[in-house]
Image (cartoon, rainbow, N blue to C red; front, side, top):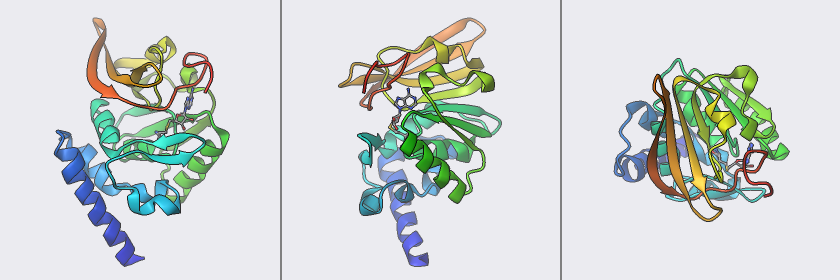
Length: 219
Ligand code: SAH
C-alpha cells in the first residue's frame, strides 16, 4: 500500500511538471491540489495506471474524466480563494470537485446521471471531502437556494451560456464554461464586476454535452 501510494505520488508530481506547469499553469494552490488529489482513485481499477496520462478517460455512461491539464487550466481560471463557495455542473467522477475542494471553502456539485451522482457522493465520504455538497438534478438551472457563488464551473459543453448560471454569480464572481457545437467548443470565462459582465476566451476544448433545460435537449 505504502509503496503503491509512493508510485502514484511520483506519477502525480511528474504530471504536474510535464503537463501542467510546462503549459503555463502557475497558481501555487492549483499546482498543490493537482499534486495531492489521488486521480487514480477516481477511475475504474482497470484504468488506474493510465490515470496520470495526458488525456481524458472513460468513467462509464458515455462520460469522461477530463484531461489533467484541462482540469488545472479551468481551476486556475476560477481564481479560487479559500473563502470561496464554488458551484460545479457535471460531477462525473468527482475529480474536478475534489481539486476545487482542496482550495476553496465549499463546493456544490450537480450531476444529472443518478449512478454517477451516487458513486461520487459515496466516494467523497470515503475520502473525507466534507466540504463537497452533492445534488442530483439538471445543473443548467443552477442551485438557486445556495446562490450567489464566487465561482461556477461547467464541465460539459453548452450550446450557449445559460443565463440562469450567470444570474447566480456573486459580485466579483467568475464563471468558466465550454461553449460551442457538439464536436468542439471554446472555453469561455465570464467575470461579474461593477460594470457588468466581462467575457474572456481561453481557447479551444472538447467536452461531453451539457444536457438539460438550458443546454442540449438530448444526450
Ligand atoms: N467534472 C467531471 C467531468 C465529467 S464529464 C470530472 O471531473 O470527472 C461531464 C459530466 O456532466 C457528466 O457526468 C454528465 O453526466 C454531466 N452533465 C451533463 N449535463 C448535465 C446537467 N445538465 N446537469 C448536471 N450534470 C450534467
